[in-house]
Image (tube, rainbow, N blue to C red; front, side):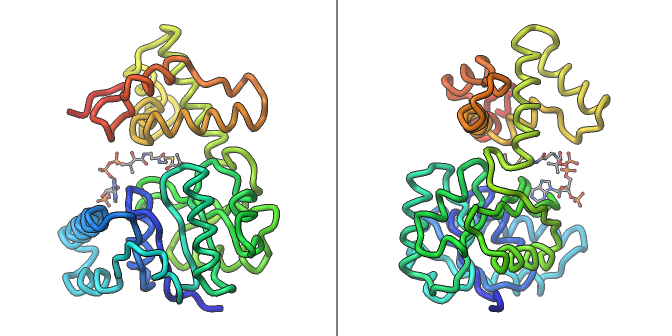
Length: 283
Ligand code: CAA
């Protein structure tokens, strides 16, 4: 089956980035969200990114027009009736995701692949909410999607080899590199990255070094493009905490205990860049 039409569910940071990359590659993209205003904002953001590419002479006005023409905006899952692939990038909430997959399973053709951008939920459980668990898979992108080269191809226990191959093929076509990962708490990247961030927060919490010093240390001492505390603010402290909790529960191992300071920031609503305040201020 050839993929040419894709629905992306969720037009937030991840969904809009995924949709942009797909449209830039030449796919017809139906961008879906619950409200038209979210979609309008996402398209505006994508158009701005394309303008930046034009300024930098990486794209032309014609490219921009062609890319934007590949988009259809949708607030109805029924619009997925003739797509070959759905990539769900809705909010990281199990009940919401399971509900979306149940609905998609009823609407889309039997051969359509249903992929989730989940960063921490069980793909196997999501697959099991459908009658096509062999055609459900994780396709995990990284923020900012247009820049980050990796796609974690997270196979559910039930994912068929044919489905995994189709997703690896697509990953290559969009100019990214796929890694083959089995369904497991935090998959590969977040299992390594988020405990590192949690440890950085512990380093601040225990007064070993300030947030600025920890970030400077990891930028200059380990060549990270962004320090771990700044990265935590960038990812969202609520997202970091949720992933730590999945690791803590999933492995029943105290080494994944979320730092109390991380919890306090989330309780205070200081979620990072998106709220204007995390470990750093963005106001
Ligand atoms: N969208 C598109 N392009 C963007 C962008 C965005 N949101 N943000 C930055 N860029 C581009 C810029 O246009 C620029 O490209 P050019 O130089 O070709 O014009 C390039 O990225 C570098 O940007 P900047 O010069 O502004 O800033 P920088 O050099 O500090 O890079 C960064 C910014 C790419 C974000 C870099 O700091 C970085 O790689 N940080 C780490 C990001 C990371 O680890 N992400 C993964 C988070 S984990 C996750 O996403 C998954 C999860 O489940 C939690």
